[in-house]
View 1: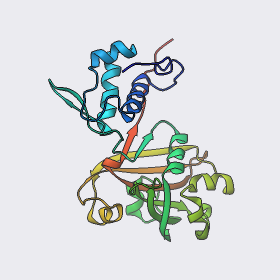
View 2: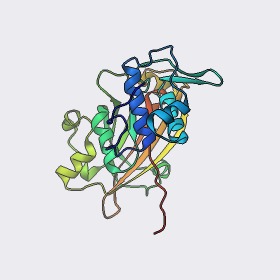
View 3: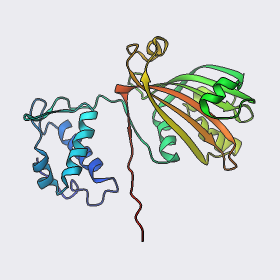
View 4: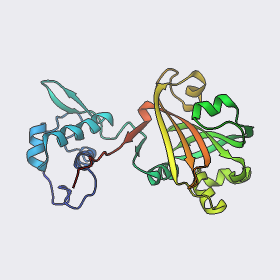
Amino acid sequence: MTQTGQDRGEDSAAPRYVWLAETLKKRIAAGDPPVGKLLPTEHALCESYKVSRHTAREALRLLAEAGLIVRRRGAGTLVIATESKAAFSQRLGNVDDLMQYARDARLTPDATAMISLESQLARTFGIAPGGEYMRVSGLRAVPGEPPLALTDIYIRADLAPPVEKLVEMNGLIIEWIATTRGVATARVDQAILAGVTTEAEAARLDCEAGAAALRTRRRYYDKSGRVIAFSDTVHPGNRFVYEMSLLRETEG
């Protein structure tokens, strides 16, 4: 593997290990090295790309999570695929990242209903019971890929869009509320839970019942702290990756 000035990420704002992982992904996709051959060792990657051992190790971890390589103790790092098995990689950093998810993973609604927020559902999401909400259920997917997620979105009734508008929105409901109702999202609280798919969820998602899954529960608030909407989403574990970067604050 050889590198160019651009490969070295001199102008990249991404964390070094993310940049290195993306660089290696591109080379693997181009057949360098091909499936069945070994990647350079961590030490060789450090020398070639002028990175730390930690950066090289974290980059290889991302490649392994994407299903591109397997790491075998004493045998090296073997390339096993040229394309990631994960259908979608979600950056987790700010509200704009979550909005980008809605743009890329389009929602196809298949059921709507007006509901009163009962106490059990309210406790699940940590919000006060009562009030009317529109529940929108459907599948999120990237065009040409298997379903990415099964989603239930609960929208405050006074902000809810007309039912006939939902399909043409492609799931950009929160952005529609901001532009049409004039109520922008100022904060999103999110919980991520590990679990398995139920039979009903698996049937909708075209996966095996009991397969590993990630469940995300989100609450969307306006600038005054009022709930705009909340959602419950189930992702098959092998189709979805969360990525985040954490910075340590230093004094002075």
